[in-house]
Image (cartoon, rainbow, N blue to C red; front, side, top):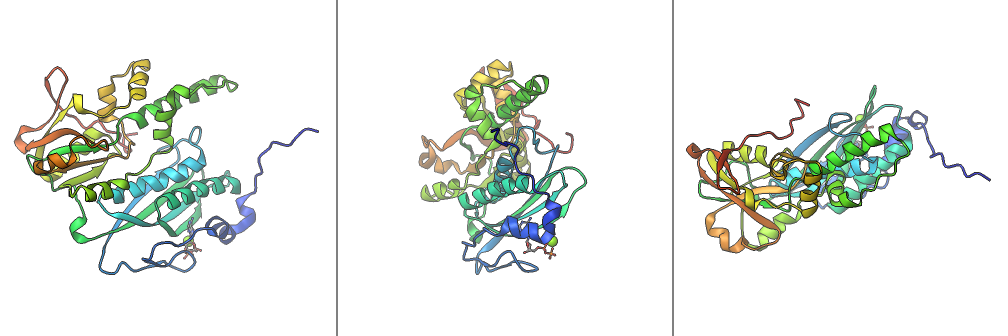
Length: 348
Ligand code: ADP
Ligand code: MG
C-alpha cells in the first residue's frame, strides 16, 4: 500500500475566528506573578507593584522581514518572540509578557498556524514570558505578525541609549556577522532549489551561520552576568541592524564619538570561512550585517578589571569626545570614518 504523505490541511475558515484563537492559545500557561489576567477577556490585567514597566513592539511582514521559502514557520514564531524579548533585554530589564497579533490569508491551513504557534510557545517557555493576548485577523495575501513584549525592572537598573561617557569602553556580547552570512547561504540555496528542485543541499559547513539566522537567541543572560560582576552599563542597545548603525545610535544619543578596533571584533571561524567562500570582506559583514541580537553597551573605564578576559564579552573600542567622530581603526592602523550601512527595512 502506498502511504499517504500529504500533510493534513485544515481550512481555517472551517474553525471560525473564535475557534481558531481558542485552538492556538489553549495551551498557554501563566507563570509570571505580575500577570493577573491573560488571554480570555477584553484585555489582560497586569500588576507590576513598585517596578517600572518596559514595553516594546515589532511588526514582521512576509516578503519584507521573512521569506517562508527557507524560514520554517516554527522558527519564524520563535524568532518573532526573540527579537522583541531582545529589545527588553537591551533596556537591562527582565522580559515578562508578550502579546501576539497575526493577520493570515486563507492560503495558510490550520496546521501552518499550529507550527507558528509551536515556535511562539517554545520561545515563551524558554524566555519565561506569558502570552497574555493578541489579535487575529485576515490578510489578503501574506502573513503579518506583530508582537509586543513587556518587561520589568527597578528604575535604577534601566539602561538607555544616551548614557555613554567620552572615556567609556565599548563592549559587545557573543560574536557578530554570522546571522547575515546565514542569510546569504539560505538565499543561495533558494536559488539553487529554484533551478533544480531535486537538489539535496549539504549545509554541514554552515550550521552555525544558519542557526544564527533562523534561530537567534536574545541575551537575557547578560543582565544577570553584569549584575554578578557589579557592572551597570552606561548605555546599551541590541544589534538588530548591524554593529555600525547601532554604534552611531549610541554615539548620537549620548553625544560622544567612538574608536572601534577591527582586530577586536568577535567573529566565529565558520563565519570567516564562509566570507572567504563568498568572497566578501569579513570585517565589512561583521560591522554591517544585522540580526545577530547581541547586546552592545558601554561601561565606565573603572570597570575594566571586572570585565577583562570574560568570555561572554569583547571590548571592541572606546568612546571619545563627540568632535573626534566615529572611526574604525583597521588592523593596518588606519583610521576610517564609520558609516551606518546597516540593514534598513524602509529602503528594502
Ligand atoms: P476582541 O474581540 O476583544 O478583539 P478577541 O476575540 O480577538 O477579542 O480575542 C479573545 C482573546 O484572545 C483576547 O484575550 C485576545 O487577547 C486573545 N487573542 C486573540 N488573538 C490572539 C492571538 N493571535 N494570540 C494570542 N491571543 C490572542
Ligand atoms: Mg480581536
